[in-house]
Length: 344
Ligand SMILES: Cc1cc2nc3c(=O)[nH]c(=O)nc-3n(C[C@H](O)[C@H](O)[C@H](O)COP(=O)(O)OP(=O)(O)OC[C@H]3O[C@@H](n4cnc5c(N)ncnc54)[C@H](O)[C@@H]3O)c2cc1C
Image (cartoon, rainbow, N blue to C red; front, side, top):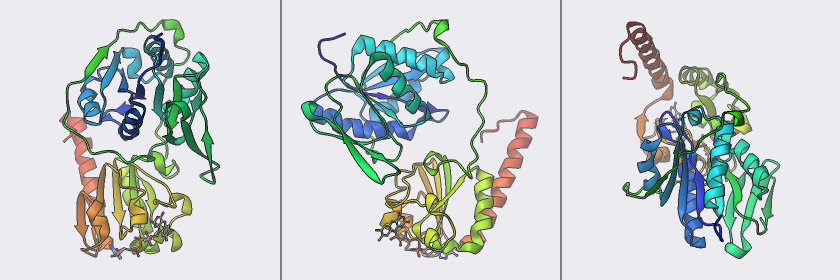
């Protein structure tokens, strides 16, 4: 180990579509931290054939990338991840290691901390202060209280942050950065578990913050449109969320409210139906990857946040959208039977 721990490290997370939003959020937070502490912002990129993620990581501020590719990392085996991360920590001794408070980050962080007897703070909201007086604030009891924690002196410090806590910065152009490619032998006997299959959670009941697609209802949807919007959600494998207007009108429950006094969400796609787009609502969804909005009012503020703006009555539009989805699904199924390209 070096004399002094160095670098703000981010553990990258990806899926078939590339680097996940949580990593971009951590990079955005990590940039501020790295600047304040005068540290380098580094990313641990672990997986199998993940080199394609490097340009995105550099666009969002990565200054150095530790790349480990191994077939055992392709299945996101946490035993393999924990082993490889441990090897990197032993060799490079980072100052802070940040992960998403995601299913894998939430398991990995305490494992690493226990192995090296390190401080570990989960579900952090923010990290403030300088090197000698770092403070981490985390929420407890469903945001009823906030706790400020002094991580004391031992480093590296392990921190997990929940998705949706940080605004994603504007990306720069991809640039050349130092990529340290490591070959790590993963001993067979460290594999204590093997993932056999993945069963997708029911979008009707999963936590809204974890939803990949959200159909979001507003007061304009009214109670009478709930069945058709649920049908849209089912067709897309989406979860239902909504505005405070929808909660106040009894269309959805408070646990499904998006916004400053509700949940912060970062789905791949959010479809806003009958929502005006008050700032208290948009504060909770503005980091969504893609937004489609349906509203009868051309001047609705939600359109400022939408990639696809549909002006019209949702009661007319949504049934047509569902028809199109069903047709596309049928075409895709036929394509699979005939062995055609099913991605188009
Ligand atoms: C302290 C505080 C905290 C708050 N926190 C939150 C929060 O966390 N989340 C939140 O959402 N709000 C929050 N609010 C409330 C917020 O200010 C708005 O009042 C709320 O977001 C409005 O909800 P809405 O867009 O569903 O309703 P409205 O503003 O009433 O908008 C309804 C929209 O539906 C459209 N519409 C009507 N009929 C149709 C139709 N048939 N087809 C298509 N479009 C149609 C209308 O044109 C309109 O734009 C908060 C307010 C305060 C003061």
